[in-house]
Length: 261
Image (cartoon, rainbow, N blue to C red):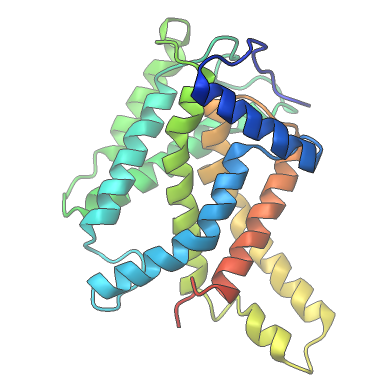
């Protein structure tokens, strides 16, 4: 089932550029991919390796996600604030944020989004050296108020809210790349491909394990934020987007150096 979107044509140069990118990518993928997917793919190919290298150099080799990392902490906090602003606004024609039905993708977005917001926000404060456990409560309170006050929330163009959620999605991609890199001994595709005795079933088993590992992460950190920003996409489209995310993550971590060494 395809989620509903408004039919108002885009106005302004940014909105037209985003719509043009959506149209071009949709033509290449039978409507499955959009601007966010292209940006995330590009970022996964360069962001996690670069962020890991810079973080290791500045923190004495602790790698991505050191205990004290002000730059990434600031990025996490800014991304979280923008994501909360997406929750606190709406776009013309959007359905009410909440459970619409078992077959509606947007129905499964709010709770995973709460989880990912709390994790990213708390991690950002920790990296800034700010000791506070209030993030979860603040995010929960804001979200509950916004659910109740949905008809009265400020209205922003859909393109604006989509762009506001992009930093959070890119942070999520970097986080996942770092997690997989830290577990590179478990997800060592390069060694498996270089093993002359490795069987296809070994590769499929490793891939299946990573699917199980990454599916919930994608639901909470990428699917849910995007679905809150704009209710769109069929289950088949989201499956294609997840498959692309998984493939590019494997390429980034295994072959482009996000896995460190």
